[in-house]
Amino acid sequence: MAVDLKALEGKSRLLFEVPLKPLQGQRFQPTGFPNLGAATFRSAAGDCLLVESAQSMANRLEATLWDFGAQRPVPAAEGISHVRVERKGGFLTDSMLEAHRINSPYLLEGKDKTFFNAIKNEVGAMEEGPIDNQKLAETLLKYDIGSLLHGVFLSKKELCGGRLRVKRALSAFIEAEGVRVAASGGVKNDQVNPAGDTKTGFGNVPFSRDEFTADKITLFVNLDLALLRGHRLGENAYHLLVLLALYKVSKLVHGDLRLRTACDLTVAQKAFPSNIPAFALPEPGQIEEDLKKAVAACKGTMRETTVKYEDEIKKAKDKNEQSDDDEDAESDEV
Image (cartoon, rainbow, N blue to C red; front, side, top):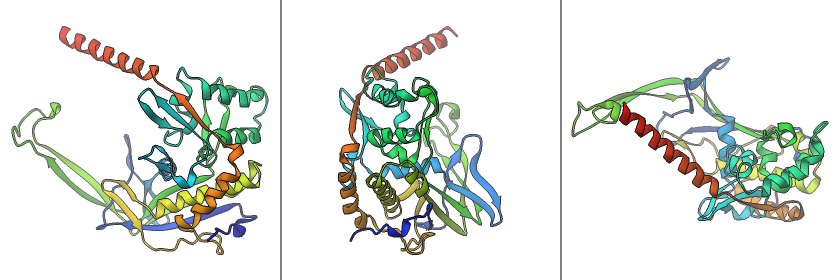
């Protein structure tokens, strides 16, 4: 059954609020930040909590299109643009897996300048003066369509002075309301030497642990339709971007929402209505055929690029080993 997108015509945003709950029990572990811990805050709803950030959700949404066994896009998305990084032993990484997508050092900092030079040639006319956002969008569609959905910031000064950026069109985050701390803890037991030196990993080590319960957990999704139209890439590309976004979200909520060891969530209801009453989120199987056709319709505007990254890894490894040797020598002297 084809996905009818007519209800989205003329709309600036497509919003979903997906209710979640712990798969088992009531406790869950939120995301944590260095020197901050859990991201708690107060609102009109009372004590609240950021369970998963927009940055993390972008990475999780990207992963819905990746077949980790084959190390390629899933069959429904085969043919979309992305940059593959290989070394002598085979696959290394991909723009779809990198946290900063095509701004990854594995794509831009290696000796193989295939991709770097391609981007530089595409945007060379924008070295001075204002950025041509349509040309930038066309370049991203050609080399890495995911950057048009999840955003990118090409910070290298050699690329238009580090001014190339596109904001996220697809954003998601998870928040909890009415939260309470569920304090617990445990002990790392050393059955051989309980009184051993804990600084070197021996001995019994007690620890505390804070998890949370909540009255309400919600996944919020925002698809900026106006931004996608504003790229002026044509109807076929716009149609593909919308279907890709819907497929990512649908695979996420109908799939595995185990965010961490102690944060295993599931949807609390089967239907996911949106801010547009005439449109509900389809299931992945309802989108796949339309997605394949949309990819085929844009075949001439997208490509898969392969970059080699080999010598740099060995060099970095040798440097680290040398650094370790130096540290050992200093320790011996002391």
